Image 1 (cartoon, rainbow, N blue to C red):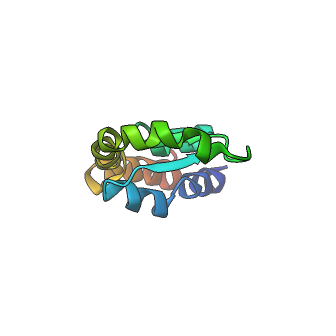
Image 2: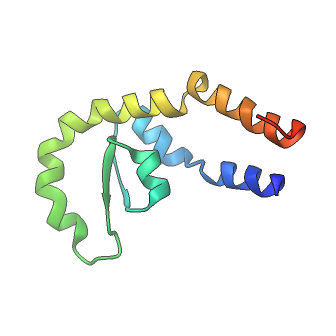
Length: 101
């Protein structure tokens, strides 16, 4: 059970999105609970399986781009930077190794 917890934790990693957002580049991602957590207010979630999704949303995205870019970086800094992630990693390792967190 603990190994499954570690796998789940690492599967949440999404370095390409984190790097883009850390550079202030908002992302467009498929709407899912995991990506909602990753993207936050630093981009847009949509159903990317729908034909023409980007064309339909492009006017809204283009207008909001300058507002979303700073939020993109802020979201990554507050959730995925080392100072934010370190306590989470230590708690997870404590659970896995010591059976408590």
